[in-house]
Length: 151
Image (cartoon, rainbow, N blue to C red; front, top):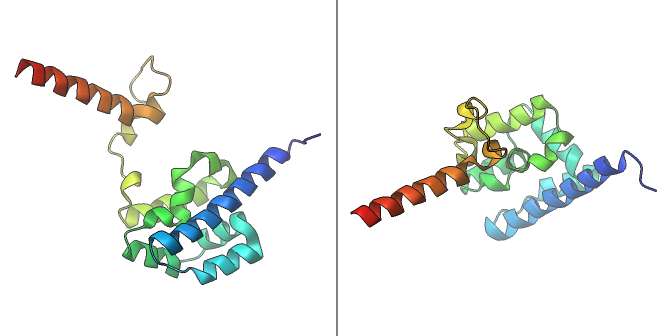
């Protein structure tokens, strides 16, 4: 029988796999062999490795190498920021550290001009906060099609 803590364990296992995945992708897609990162994963697993890196005073050499290659999407910080399913594994402070590092290096998914308005406008659309880009894109396409038909 599964216990209450099993969901957290399963989430940690998923996170471990995702951390190994960014290591493999960095090697194949960005030609970056993160040997120190792999060693950390082997010794500490994914969650502890992420926390060690987040609590370091500066970004890691790997973060810098991936930034130089234009691949911040392969950083631990991006993994944490971009995947809400892992947010519960981290404190608000840890998520903020990840976000601040990404912002300071101009990581595009962090810079959402609509974010300050999410939740500020009453709506009957229940998934507006998560799907606003899709709704705006759909509205823009409708407008373009309408203008195209008129013009």
